[in-house]
Image (cartoon, rainbow, N blue to C red; front, side, top):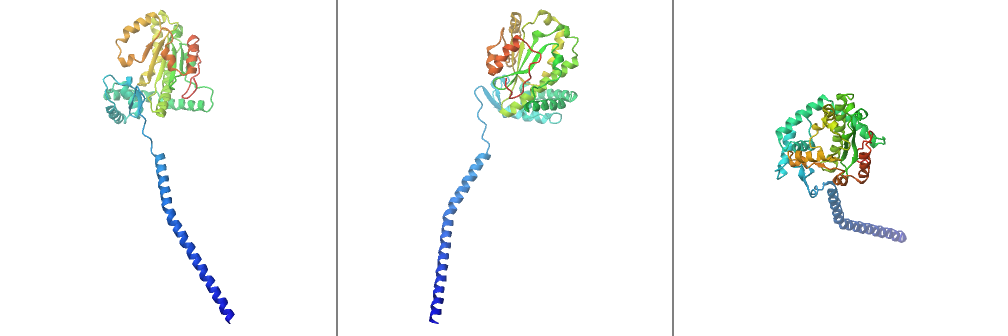
Length: 349
């Protein structure tokens, strides 16, 4: 009985010891938990701050020298109308144009800005021009044409050999025209119009409707390029046009039928306001150079500033092109090609 009592007492002591150890272990873990909690909370706060830093959009950087920020887009200072001293009012004018055009034309901030710049910040004139553009786009089914051109652009980016514009072969019988054949260093499209190649004998054979259709397709494609690049970069992109006068003759200039045909070639351009950033007239004759000096005096400084005339190839033009396009320019000017590839945004010159 004494032995049984001793064993029972021993078991009781062992059980009590285990309970004490378990209680001590539990107390130790609680202390560790209390010590870790501030660290975990601090880490959680740090994670939240890091996530916030990812979600917050960084403020837009200040525009580079020579540019101003208007409506969320960088534009060159010379694009502002004469006498425009600030840019704050232009933002409010953009809102006015959008509100007044909402009933007949879906006009985004970029196009509203282009309309304002093209109309010297005259809101009433913007609305009048927008009404004309809306009517023209509806009559000519421009939305459907735009969808077709975008599909062709997507095919090029997926590996298609080249971009195709409507009626290019037919229009080439009248004159050799190379839309979007080169790319500027800043990614802008560059087109070459070989005016000196205009064929007066073909003036009657190329139908007016074909010339108008080519014009619509070409300038709509340019607009797709400019809109896409402007949205991507936050800078108002522009079309660079090169008029090559090499080979032009007095007979071409004096042929009224030929002149009217060439007007149709560029007729759609009037519906795309503030799309042209520079016009380079190259290989100009002495007669044209003298005439230009006279005509320049009747143009606004803003318009005249876009046009550069040179008896050869302008150094400013060469400097504006990306290296590959600068090399190709000489070849296209010396040996104009009817079927020069039509490039697309991001394509190598």
